[in-house]
Length: 282
Image 1 (cartoon, rainbow, N blue to C red):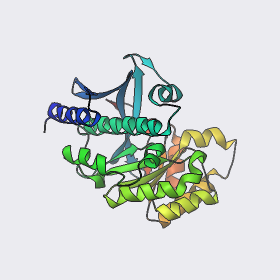
Image 2 (spheres, rainbow, N blue to C red):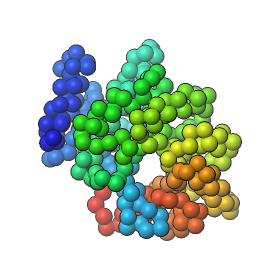
Image 3 (spheres, rainbow, N blue to C red):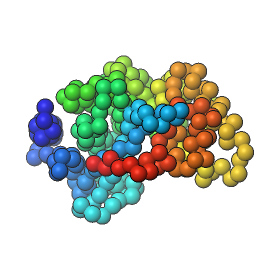
Image 4 (cartoon, rainbow, N blue to C red):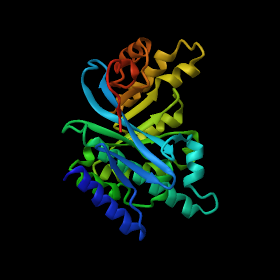
């Protein structure tokens, strides 16, 4: 199905679901944008490369770029103030779910230009979305994926793990397990270099297909820690023990490229590998 026809299909679907003139998808210059209230949603893709052979691209991570009134960029907390209700939990979760679904639809439609049969797309899901849906996680988005001619097995659901959601870990594991039953792959994203019991228990219980860390955050918080390599190596061994793959993100220097290589991380992402390349900004 042509891109404009897919956009028309999903706009019709959004309109039916909201029982209103809600047609949030827009095509401009073969790129798809989403409109959510006063927000305009873009997609930015970053290649994930094999650490031992960076010329091989295994998939793409996608991040959301949000603008207000076509030009003014918003910080995440401002975005939440615009899209969420602070008074009613039901409205709060509904807003999160609607925004999350729209963003992922935008990303999937833009990904069609990059998709290959053996590549994967990493899509982050808001933890509040997972907690707000009680069952059949991923069923709604499965229809989006299939309509685009893609499969759930090439889609990785990414959960950013923070201390805020430690007490909800069992509910999050159940939700991610529902995604997995539909064929999705699962990834955990840690911004900090963590090695505590909670993290290892979460990896052991969920057995994620991927676990990723941010090189920038590691550098910012290392404070001259000479044991970074050892900690990364221990974490990578734990990931490998559950048949998963480790990803080091935000690799912007040779130092972190070497760190990823010698600590055994399978995939890397960052500006160090993209010099002279064109960023896929949709």
